Length: 331
Image 1 (cartoon, rainbow, N blue to C red):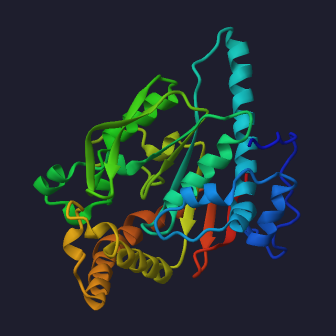
Image 2: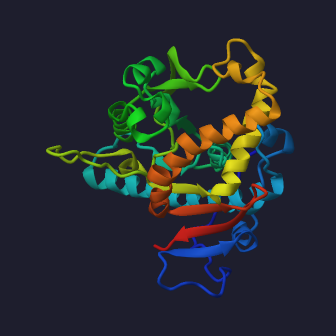
Image 3: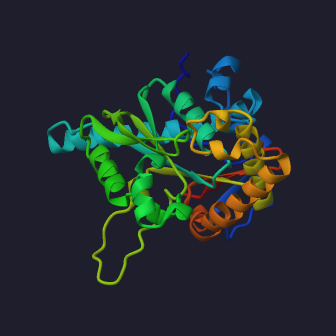
């Protein structure tokens, strides 16, 4: 089921919260206010399809998809269509067709905040707008260094920090995709084995839209002494989203997910975290809390959270995991 085309009109601004901070670079919307911006756009998603898109332990309903993600897809659809028109008139001006260049969306946020589910929902909704049916999704986890490299560099306890990624390879991938190259390959990461999958890749072939989901995708490049300026991941984005929540809530979600995995995938002897399967409830909570505090919270505070204000849209979750507020950067 596709979504009917939107008329080329400006998104209304009169439904936002009355008490706007005029000094903020963002307009703030409650979920109800934001939901009105879907207008009469039909929801092209069934309950069964949503179940397939949810990550492990994720709680998201069709109502939330309709209220939050559908208006966001409508807004991005307008942006993509205008960008496609810009490429068309530029090609006419230059007198020859240009290579098809995708519109790239970055989605950032902490571990356990729900980035993967949000990215999959957005991919599905955006692909059902008629003018950009080909939407690809990659996660930057695939660009982590393999465990053997991290172990050699004594960085396993900093996995997910910016320095644990092969930034050069990721930037080359995005550069090739943004240049309109055909059949660009991205490596694949397995959360089961907690490592890069050898000899397996995802092929991105001139999509209309590419969604790039990852912890640190909004981080700007930080040069070392003597380094010449170079592009970084966020430089390739046309639109960016940050998924936000209170630290205490994310910590609880992380521990809940750890406890659930202990009873499911951790039981497989081949799973990287199989050693945690036989922990008692008390031991499991302590272990999860230790991993959260020493690695994920440290990464959130130092590297991820400081990039929040670089996003075009910030989706703020409440304690129940539901998105309660939306902040949209003023143009």
